[in-house]
Length: 203
Image (spheres, rainbow, N blue to C red):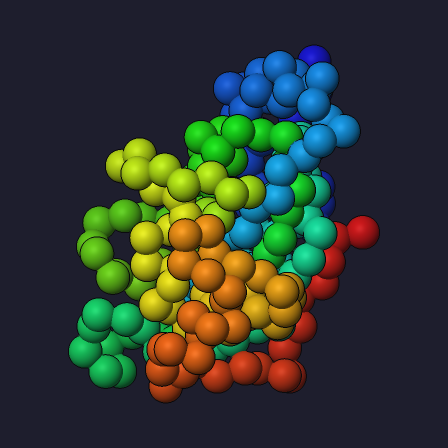
């Protein structure tokens, strides 16, 4: 059986991989040569936002059955759905992963990473230390209420589309079309690239 990663001295916030996720990885051993491609959006507007995003990327990379293959530039975004200046701005990024985990196990891991950074879900559009959202998983289209694929609002969010296009210029959102076209159709107001900030691809 795959072993959960250990907590390293440089990243004390990351929780062990849930046993159910490890079981799914072990069950998927026969398909390790055929991983699926998934797109994951990250966002944070509390605490050290850049450090949190990097910690989330490292935690995803440390997950059995997940390898981070691409990391976008950082964007700074005004919060959605709230009064102006009522919350700090977000740092947003998109990562591309290859994974042998099925979508529900990848979602479980995403939630575990959020919880490691003390994410609290007590207010819609509320401030949060970390968001980890699965935007797309291969070509899967599903209306499962627990995990709708692709993400039902990704096509209208510049803070997802812009960094995704940066990391994958040929990207397409299943059922919606090329990301470049989707980005052209939405406003980029309040969504600004931060060229002075950088997230690293795990080694």
